Amino acid sequence: MIIETLSTFPCMYDSVMNSSMMRIAQEKGILDFHAYDLRDWTHDRHRTTDDDPYGGGAGLVMKCEPLFEAYDEICSSGEGRDFGSCPERADWAASTKRVPHEPEVPSGTSARAGLPSDWALPDQPAAPQSDCLKPCTIFLAPQGERFCDEIALDLAKEERLLFICGHYEGIDERAYTLADRVISLGDYVLTSGELASMVVIDAVVRKLPGVLGAEDGAITESFSDGLLEYPQYTRPAEFRGMRVPDVLLSGDHGKVAKWRREQSLLRTARLRPDLLADVELSPADRDFLQRLGEEG
Image 1: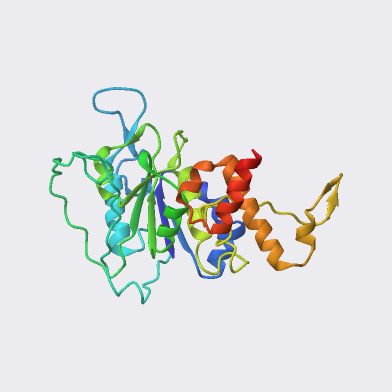
Image 2: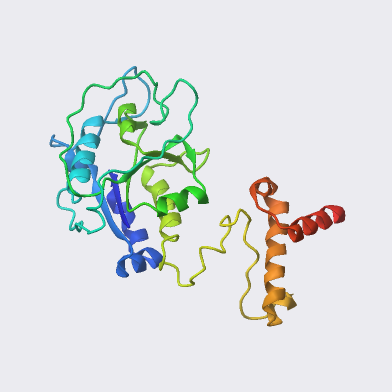
């Protein structure tokens, strides 16, 4: 998978992308990562990427021109300018077209980040054609769809992702016409889109085959089956009077599997009961939850 980011502070990715799982994924050739500096597409000596908002107000708004120029060049060349190599992979040439995700939006708005449906933008010059696969382009913004494990799994199926990260007061609304998906981490505000994109990238990359050491690691994590994950323990078997449950020391894999399932159900019922409505429960699961409810 190729993951690219476009932002005003690309150095923010250095620590995360050069450590732990991200570094290993790149060394294995599973992930090809590039962080692009939006300032490379500015044309003034101050390398300006923002300006005062029309209508007044606090803060600065990121400008359209560098965002559109950067997007066109990244999409058309697959390499941008002075970013190192972005290989012309054989599987890229199969198709330069992809069907963008169009989330449900309220009536009277466009799926493009909630833009008015009757908003006709001025004609834009067509980006140069290329054999490179057009990336699935993602913006991080409060108005986006709430990020979850299902979205991470969807994005992990893409071959190329481009994250466009905002700063300051926000991004000129016209730039959202470039988005295939707009994602929000939750009902709070971060200093920059780089931070939000790192969360999404981490959740996506761990879904890629071969990234995690354990073959079924991503399968048994919280939310992978709709439930919170069961409790985990390791050595020593007893620590400061706290003992590992005997079933985990029994060597009976059937009993361990049953205990883990029930603990996932128990934890979810107590901490996130809202998740149970969307979980496919077996008769044994339902029986366990019924007994749990009777016990109070």
